[in-house]
Length: 227
Image (cartoon, rainbow, N blue to C red; front, side, top):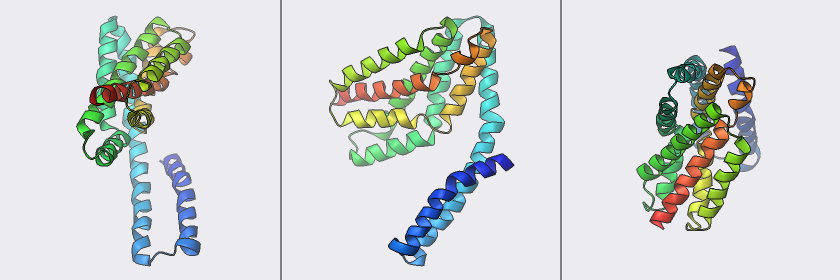
C-alpha cells in the first residue's frame, strides 16, 4: 500500500502544483470556483489508490490464473473464446472507453450513439485478443500481424468518412487504460507461462499492441456503415 500511495502522489502532485501556481499568478479564479479543483484532486487521489490496490490484489492474480488454466484444457477454441469474452467484458468496464463514447455521442449530436460505439470498440478488442491468444499458442510473428492489422487500418481509413478516422485512433488509445491493460497482460503471461517455451516471456508481450488495433478497425467499419 505504501508503494501505491507513493506512486499515486508522484502522478498527481505535478499537475496539482502547476495548476495551483497558475491560479496564484495568472488565472486567479475566485476561491469558490477553485475549491472544486482541490476537492477533485483529493477524490482522484483516494480513488486511484483504491483502484490500484484492487488491480494488484484481484485483477492481476485473477487474469494470470485464468491464463494459466486455459491452455490445460488442450482445446484451442476454449482459449480463443474465453479470450474474446474477457476482452469484451473488460473493455465495456473500462472507464476511458465509456468517457470517450459519451463525448463522441455529444459531439456528434447523437449521430454515433454511445452504446453502438461502446459495443463496437469492445468487440474489436475481444476479436484481437482472440488473435493474440492464437499468436501465443502457434508462435505467430508479431511483426507480420501488426503489419497486416495496420494495413487494414489504412485501407479502411481511405474508405470511411474523414470524421471517423480520429475517433477510431482515439478508440484504440482509450482501450489501453488502467483496467484493460493489466488484465490483458496478466492473461497473456498466464497463457505463455504454461506453454513452457524458451520464448514464453516474449510471447506475453505484444498483446496490448494487437488489442489496440481491434477498436480502430471496428470504428472505421462503423464509419463505412454509417457514412
